[in-house]
Image 1: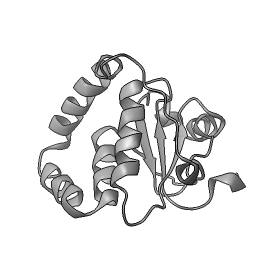
Image 2: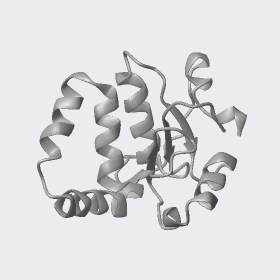
Image 3: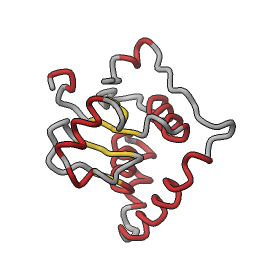
Image 4: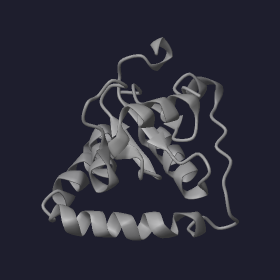
Length: 140
């Protein structure tokens, strides 16, 4: 899949307003690298990656891949912490602090938010409309 490139990729739930808001948060705070690309779980690329990784069948909110061919995608709290680390600065420090918590506790908190994510955005779903500059970072 040549359109995917070779840098980090964040798959997100394209039907979720909270997830769209989270992607917008990442775009606003990505002031240094700007190498992270995005694709919805439901799109062509997200579907192809999920087909290659049967362990992602239940993933329905966020998946981090260092490269599109990554053999070990991150899900749940591990993916969230990797996003914060990618952003750098204080966000990276926050991720470092959160890593001290046991993975089971982090994933429990992540699952709690994920279970209710469709109700967490006031006014319902949010349409993600990237700017012209940001559009190149979206793969589908």
